[in-house]
Length: 202
Image (cartoon, rainbow, N blue to C red; front, side, top):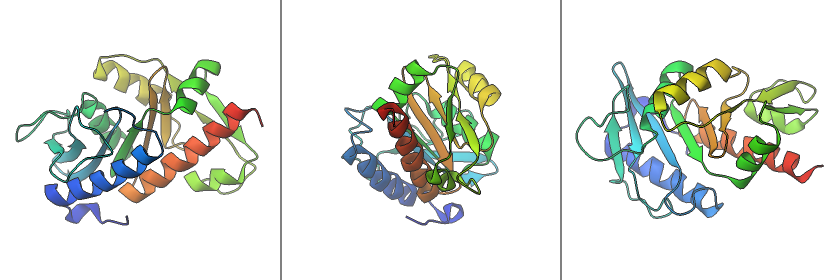
């Protein structure tokens, strides 16, 4: 979905997030009520629409979103995802217009296997995250999990590589971002493909 985020109101943002959530849920990346998505609806002041907590991500409606501020706190009521603060931190830090958090088997397994970071090289699919050619080397950072979103955000900020629009949270899942919901989705699909390849040992 190619959407100019600067024109989105909360209902439109909810429709975008519901559609994207259904797609990821169909891949098995948001089982139960896990995972969360966000889209920036205002840059100054920073405001994001974030999927509401406790909902089946394959069954979201446009109203199942919460407007949060730059600290991840609800602006007009509702219960945002527990990770809303981290979504806001990523958006502020990277300039992203959309953030994806999914719980994939490959991200958790590879985070355990390579806790120091996951190196990708000599792969054409690296172009899908903005790399100019296949023969580059890019590391996907792995950070230690924390229930304190400020601590987790500090770890993400310290570890992130500007060439890699993603980070693995050990034992938890994958955070990915992009300029738009569509780009964030594409980045998520590409990074997950890379992780699945590494996990397969090929």
